Length: 443
Ligand code: SF4
Ligand code: SF4
Image 1 (cartoon, rainbow, N blue to C red):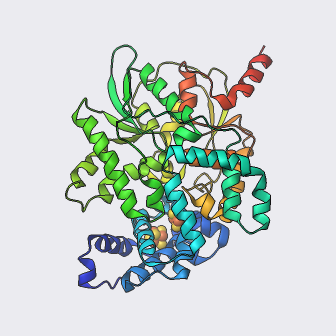
Image 2 (cartoon, rainbow, N blue to C red):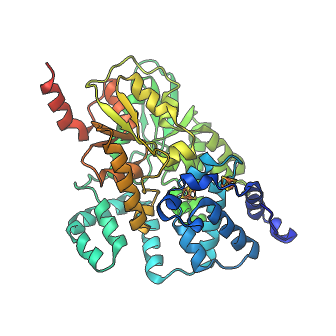
Image 3 (cartoon, protein in one colour):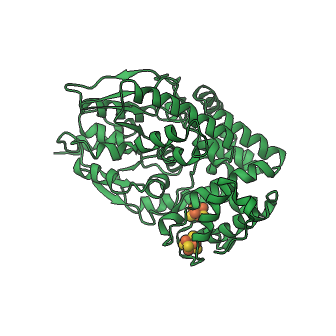
């Protein structure tokens, strides 16, 4: 694609980087077939190719974003299916990140939008505040249909995503070291994160047990907090970079202290962002090197587990699993085989979900900000999963787990909980009923 940036514009490293990405696009349109919003809406401007044109014009003209551009960029899930499909290697992720930042700096959203986005950016990154919001959501949940009638669809969507049980106060694990059982074979940092400790503390508990059982010491680095992914996707780049720097400092202290073989992440959306810290901070002289070093150590938990020889095991109960590949894991990090291979080796029957390249509609805060599209995507995903008649759904991202669980009665758990169970840990809690019924039915 030809571009017409001025020499002065190209002196800005961010513009120069986006220009390179734009020039790689040859308008072939292969990406449109796998783009969830194009599949649903059939509008070229809601396809990757259409958005690339909109972003090109917006950046070239260096003008404030228009309402039309914002509409189509806001509808993008950042699912990155287009990057997997593109034969020309167009790095759409960096391009849309730049566009979101430009929008945030130049476009004045309606007051209610600004308030909601500000609230999400403040509440979701703080486990204490987030738990309070979940408890309030639990009380207000029955009001969701009324909010729908009043046209407050985003508030209704938030309430519908609220879990059915009051979450326990999140444990502050930062600074804690979980020693290896037996001979120590390695030492890793595990991201505690912001959403996980409230919605799914069992995920990291399972990861720690599993790693310790296999001789790996686990540390939750002192000072570590939200990775910045949530605000990064809202275009709030200064906040995202400040959160990234905080974690880089926390993990660098561990790297240079007792040492780390890897930085493990059990939320694939966060993993994609941490692996991109090197790019995000490439122009920061104080952090560029440190950020690149952290990014090279970051691994999804299943990537790391695949390098360990997990103890011989067989599924405690031979369950059929529908494996939901989170977009951030399959498209963002290109981690495709490891979760399925690990589960299969444990004796589970693993089934791929048809149309597995399509997003479930979670996508960070997308299911709150774009509830109508997110609900359509969830319904489509759940229908594809239920056709497999699985006993359980496994996924590697809390966003997907919450999104899918809100639309099906099939239990949804993190992959690592099943691996922990199969190697000597407790059964994942959502499977308790299923496991006892299978055990009592067995001869
Ligand atoms: S597939 Fe790649 S090169 Fe083709 S239109 Fe899409 S982004 Fe451009
Ligand atoms: S990131 Fe996903 S929703 Fe956005 S343009 Fe690419 S395929 Fe479409």
